[in-house]
Image (cartoon, rainbow over all chains, first blue to last red):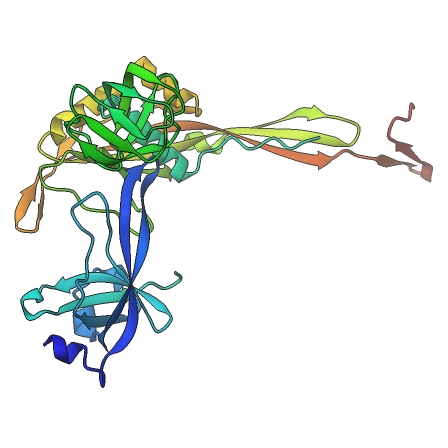
Length: 116
Length: 263
């Protein structure tokens, strides 16, 4: 599967902005970021797939991103929040990740961060 | 005449204020005996670093540790800090604060989740409608030849919601509620012109079901607090006044009084 999601005929380059080194302080959580170049395919999420997200996240566009790099949602740790994918000039926040690492690829549903 | 800064809290400042008060009541900042050497970022903790983690804030009484210093690595008897110490300190009380134990709701880009076994308090502050908010007192508080300063004071009413998760959430809510009646915390809030309305309802235990398990949860709130708001306004002083005196027969006098003129 990883060969399909990174097929040069289908895939394109995008960037994963990963939260790193975060911590809780006065006023709340803050973290730094690092950019990870990624290569994979992307498809638009259907209305039915979007309906599974919280209502406030259904307003904008949702996309699936497929890649052979692990994509992360917000973790139960104190250091990081969900990945942001920069694709086609917009930021997309990773909301759900399908665990398919035994097939060497990741599939993530992300919503466009309007106004960011 | 310089315009004084208004005395009013934003929701972010209010939440940060209550974050520090809640942490103090829940005894989140913990004191340890520690040693630091000037110019070094290593903090020796002979008693052990159990309970400390990366990201915790560290301070000391003498100011040898710079403000906003955080832990970047934890070893059994030593912490690595992100700033170098500015003085030598031996066997001094070092305060380590884990802000992840009291978190603020509605962060713009979210915040990490906690484990089901972690005791974490979330809080949020909302301004509400209340009859006390209606009364405004406007006085002339200062003036000079060119300007007049008006000061408006009124009471703003806030609801603070505390949502506590974790196995000890119910007892921590009790401690939080009783803590608000303690004079020290009253004085801390009063420095920001915030005052506790002393008839809070008791906390309620409301466990959450999520991710295939029940999360122990206790809610305390809404808890009312009054905030004294002071706003300043400066307007130009009247430079001159034209006075018209009319009788039944028509205009009797028309003259202008200018600033500083004696009548």
